[in-house]
Length: 182
Image (cartoon, rainbow, N blue to C red; front, top):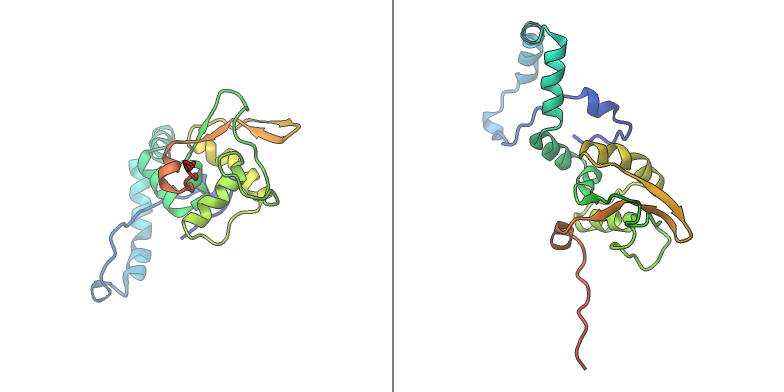
């Protein structure tokens, strides 16, 4: 299941229960949903008893929300969130420019939006966010990685404090043509 809420509302409220292994069709229980529904009251009551102190429950939940496992699951569920994992924040907004889809040819090492589009294509995703939606969601997603997002207007366009991490070269960025000797 994929969530694309960029306001953070879904992220704050959802609990991800990850089932990494598939169950063979012949081993699946057709009544599983009904069985879980019947046990839901007991499950909630047990959780309420175990976490009767709201502050300790909150601390445990927040530590889990920011864990490496939670980030990994979020990266698997949302390609834009995964793309943000390839970014690093610089101290000042003198990194990549935001760019737009009309700049041709694409320059993914210079323009952040071009890098996002190249990432989406390299991973086979067809529905990339528009520039507006990408820009609106960027700050919240980077905050989940512990990164601060800054930008400034220049004569060349909107410049950010973001740069691509080295892993992007090996994972999905196109290779630069090497100069040939003549």
